[in-house]
Length: 270
Ligand SMILES: Cc1cc2nc3c(=O)[nH]c(=O)nc-3n(C[C@H](O)[C@H](O)[C@H](O)COP(=O)(O)O)c2cc1C
Image 1: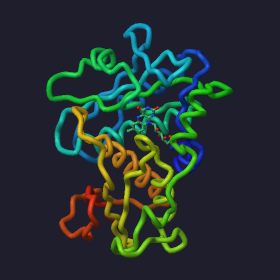
Image 2: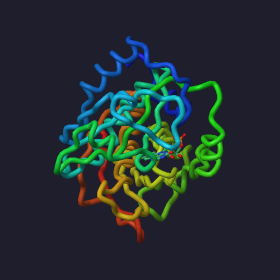
Image 3: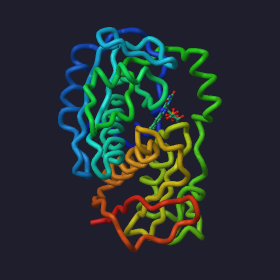
Image 4: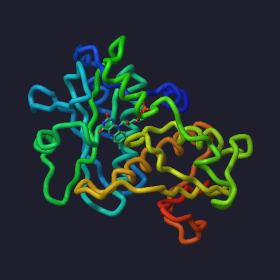
């Protein structure tokens, strides 16, 4: 990779105001090539589409000045939400490395038109789509008001999200050892409504990921599992830049979780 994922994660923000310029042919081709090769650790294929807004009648009440959207669908197989969040975020980070802004949209879109454009069949789901384009110099008033409402420039403190051995002990960044930069990359992940549902309990070798709280169930499945998939991607990519690799597995030895928090998946160092 010719760019630092950790740097991009630090600088990245959702972009909802674009400058109307279509993507250059070079950027469009690069993005198209990238999404055709995106892999996930969950053995669930994710299918992307790069869609012209005019051609398919795609729109979003929160987006200004975008004329192309990226959408993704997957079969409703076990872990499809993790796979989709992981793959979609990878594409968004790649886009940012090319100066292309994105924002995942689960709610703010004319969903029926997107699903038609993606040819979403029975047994498939398209949880999110995102505009892709060049960020405008100034945000729309609506976007700045939204960001304030979402507290989008803020995240919960490190030791409220991450724990040392058990949920009893909050983990301070200075005590997080080799996992510190990767956990910081999780902390700055985007999440639906900026709810930051990820929690991690670690012992330095393993990082057990949990999901806190839940949104009302919908036909889209659990959108917060998409948030977890995004966090897994940030974690793995940031660690990989530190020269550390590992694998995801489902563990039955994960520490017990408090009420309202559920175990999802474990990263094991190799
Ligand atoms: C799964 C998911 C769904 C989202 N859905 C919407 C949406 O429907 N409308 C919207 O304006 N933003 C949506 N967002 C963007 C979040 O509000 C945004 O990521 C969060 O407020 C943090 O801001 P940041 O991305 O600028 O750091 C979504 C983000 C994620 C990860």
